[in-house]
Length: 301
Length: 285
Picture 1 (cartoon, each protein chain N blue to C red):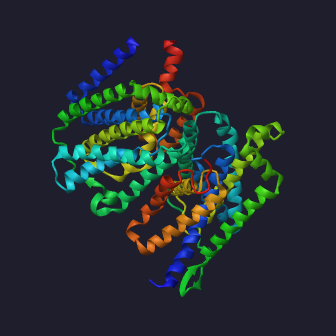
Picture 2 (cartoon, rainbow over the protein chains, first blue to last red):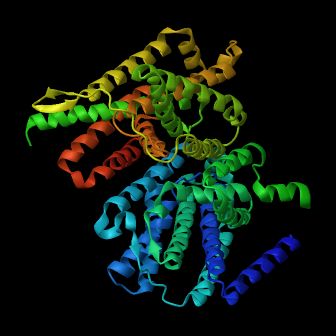
C-alpha cells in the first residue's frame, strides 16, 4: 500500500512539471489524460461500485460541455456561470435517466442509458441553430492562459477525485457494494436500493459533467463526437483495462488507453480492431484488469 | 392533411416497422433463451448486408444472395457463441455486454478491412411502384411487409410445432428441469444464437434495396432494436412485433404531424413505457 501511494504522488508530481517543458503537444495530451481520468473514475462509481454498466455517460459529459459552450459562446454569459450551469445540467440529466432506468434489471440500464445518450446525439446533430449541428460550437473561452488552465484543471480533478473517493468509502458506498453483491439481502435489511443507486448515478453523472466542462474549455470547441456512443464506451474500456474493483483502476486504464491510442493510431487505421481484441481477451482472461494482475502476482496480499 | 396521405404514411411506417421487427425478433429471441443481450446483433445485421452484397455480385440473384448472406451470418453467430460467449454464461451481466460490445468494434473494422470504408450500394432492385391512395408506393415496401409477416409466421411455427421449438421453450422457462430431462443446453443455446444471428443477417440484407451498406450501419438499428425490445418486454417475441409496429407508425405519422421532433418520438415512447410499465408491454416481472 505504501509503495502505491508513493508511486501515485510521484506520478502526480511529474505531471505537474509538464507545463514547464513548454511542449504544447505534451501539455495537451497530459491534460486530456487528466480529464479522462476524472471521467473514468466518475463512471466507475456506477459500474465498479454499483455493478451497473452505463453505455450512455457521453450524455452527461457532452451535456455539460454543450451547456457551457452554448451559454458562454452563443448567449455570451460569463464563463463561471456556463461552467456551473453545465455541471448542473449533467446532474439533472443523471437524475432523469437514473429515474427511468434504475427501477429495473441491469440489462435495461445498459440499453436505456445508451438509448437516451443517442437521443441527445440525434438532437445535437439536428438542432443546428443552437448546437451548431455537425460542426459543433467553436471559440469556447478558457478564461486564462493554457499554462494556468492546466493547474486549475488538475486541482479541480484532484478535488473531485477525492470527493468521489470519500463517497465510495462512505456508508453509502458500502451499501452500494452490498447491492451489487446481493440486492435482495440489502432490501431485506430495510434499505431502498433504488434510492442508493440514484445517489450513485447523480454522483457519477455530476462529476462526469465536471470532466465534460473542463474538456470543452481545453478543446475550445464542442463537437457531436463527444456525445456519440463511442465516447460512452471510452470509460468502459479504460475501466475494464485498469480494473473496476479498485479505485485507481480506471485511472490506470485511462493512462494506458489514451497513450496506446495516441501511439497505435500513428501506425494503423484499425485501432478499433485492436481495441476489440483487447476487450475480448480482458473479459475472457483478465477480468480484474491491470490492477487485478498486480494484486495477484506482484503484491500477493 | 387528407386521409389518403395519412393512410399512405401509415403503410410506409408499417414497412419500416417490419425491418425493426425482423432485427429485434432475433435480439429478443436470443436473449430470451440464453439471457445474453447481444450488442453485436447490430454488427451481424451489418455483416448480413455486406455478405448479401457480395453474393449478389457473384450470383446476380437477390433472393439467393439474401439467403446465403443470412446463412453465413448465422454460422458466424454460432461460432461467436461457441468460441466466446458460451465461456461467460455464468458471469455478471456487465461482462457479457462488454464482450459482445468488443465484437462490435472488431466486426466494424473487419468490414472496413475487407469491404472498405466507402458506403456500397447494390444495383437497383425492385424498381417500380404501385399506386396506393393516389400516391406512388415503392413496390419493395410491400415486399418488406410480406417478409415481416412471413417471418412472424415461421417463428410461430418453429416455436410451437417443432421439437426444437418445444425444447427451446423448455430451456427458456426452466433451464434446470429442461437439462434434467435430458436436453442438451449447449446445442440449444448455440442453435438459438445461430437463429437469432440469421434474423439479424436477413434484416441487413433486406435493408440493401432501400439504402447503402456502410461500416457502423449496425449502430442505428441496434439502438432501435433496444428500444423495441424494452418497450415490448425483453425476451418477448410477441412484444417485439407489437412494439416494432408502434415505433414504425409513431415515426411515420410523427414525420407528418410534428416533423421537428421526429427523432425524439421513439425515445418519448420509451420513456412513457418505462414510467408506466417498466417491464414492457408483454414483459414479465
